[in-house]
Image 1 (tube, one colour):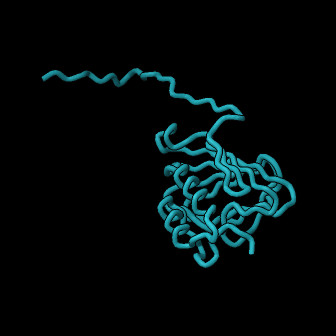
Image 2: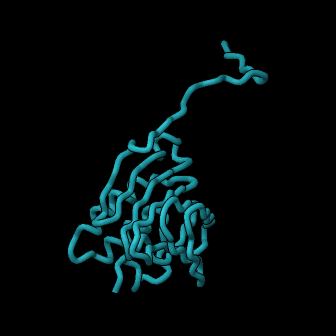
Length: 171
């Protein structure tokens, strides 16, 4: 029997790096919110997702929800983001990093009259691009179908804390 001898002492180096410039990445427009895919699930073997988000004045990114299988990190680049974690709200200026591990209820919004720009990181990514594409479709429908919205949320490891108040719109 021929066996390939495995080398336990030397690393096999590869170049699988991706360098994404500021103006690069697939961009989705969700009503007035924009999302740009920077590092995708396909690029990272489903280990990491990095997305740039632009929230216009008074926009809600997501109401309180949690994830079972992934952690989420927020990095505020411009503006003042309001981050909700469990029962507390934090005003997050540029440079703020908020790490939200799985099973931690969280949400985010822009309570100001200026645009907020942030980077969202999901680890592992759980094919988050599918979630954002589905969100684009679901939130484009008038009225938004809560059952369809919840089905999308649950498929992509997102669970609203209050299903009667989960659609990201201001009342």
